[in-house]
Image (cartoon, rainbow, N blue to C red; front, side):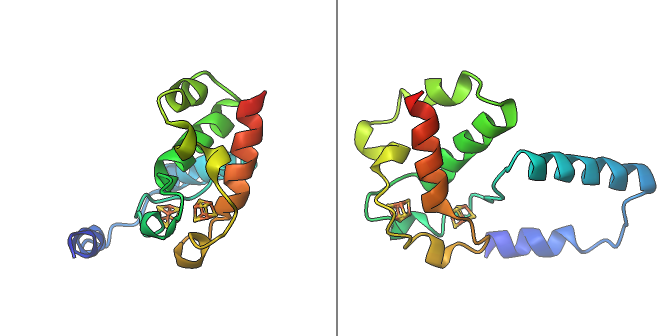
Length: 120
Ligand code: SF4
Ligand code: SF4
């Protein structure tokens, strides 16, 4: 309900973006598409559906961070604090999270990619 109210509030005022704002927005969106950033909104609908109890939005945030920076130190460092059974490599690819994701993110694929990247 809280999220619904926030969304309604966002659209209460009809104030279109000006040309500069729109340009900036499209440029960020273009960069995100180029770097394969996943559009997770952290709604957490998927979390209770994961049989492995993975913190999917947190892992996807780190995955995006790693993709955006082209492999920085933040994601590997943050993952060091995550127990082995909650790492991206613990994903069994069941895809039950994907069935409820409103963003239709290929979560199991992202977990596999992320686990491979972190092996290097
Ligand atoms: S595909 Fe992976 S992340 Fe998704 S529910 Fe199954 S184990 Fe969890
Ligand atoms: S359901 Fe999709 S958008 Fe929501 S937290 Fe999970 S991965 Fe992110």
